[in-house]
Image 1 (cartoon, rainbow, N blue to C red):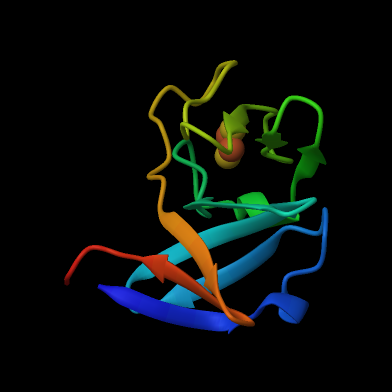
Image 2 (image 1 turned 90 degrees about the vertical axis):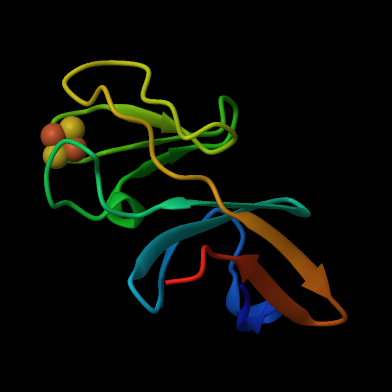
Length: 105
Ligand code: FES
């Protein structure tokens, strides 16, 4: 299901943003012209990844609670304690609008 989440100007570079689309809580990240969308709730506990530290070089976001770092490209955590990957959502721009693809609920 295709959902508009805002305009490209709403997605500030290197400033992770939490977006809620129906039951899906999504962490949206912009690095340069590239957009990423992964699950926002840490798979270890109920913590918002968009409040964590972004590493633009490795394209990971760190959970502030216990330090697991999730790949923005694959959703995989690279260090414990989280072991379950985040879902990764397709995200793209049409004109000035940003869209994500979420599963039908
Ligand atoms: S809550 Fe995120 S690593 Fe523990």
